Amino acid sequence: MLVQALLKTKATEGVVTVPSSTTVSEVAKILAEKRIGTVVISDDGGETAMGILSERDIVRELAASGSGCLFGTAKAYMTTNLVTCTSQSSVKEIMSLMTEGRFRHMPVVEEGKLIGIVTLGDVVKAQLMEVEMEKDALAGMIMGH
Ligand code: AMP
Image (spheres, rainbow, N blue to C red):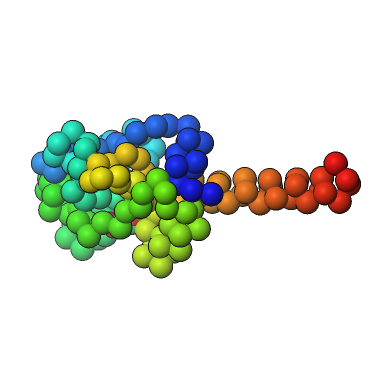
């Protein structure tokens, strides 16, 4: 399965982005309200991904430097070394990149523009769907349908 197909199965379209000047405390509020684990940082309204700030980054910084980081900006704590995929990447490929890199979010970028985001949860769901389809096809073959 390709990322293109996976994006179509997602209940919510689009990516939650915030400007790099957003405070960490505002980001935490957005993550909680929207029940998501990460925001993509973009200063041009979501076209270009500058970085990603995840709940893990916030927890790590809280443990390292205390609650003062909540007043800092997303720019100061985001990960800028982004691993991205395209709509033509295979789900298997991104699953291994996420496992090796130990992260659960992968922005989908095409010609420099952010077009979506895939989570580890989406990937697992897609894999389960594929296994189910294979199982049905094999059962159909055995029963002669
Ligand atoms: P996550 O598991 O996605 O919440 O993120 C774990 C760590 O990886 C955090 O430091 C994130 O900033 C970072 N991270 C998340 N997604 C990516 C990505 N696609 N490329 C690079 N780093 C990422």
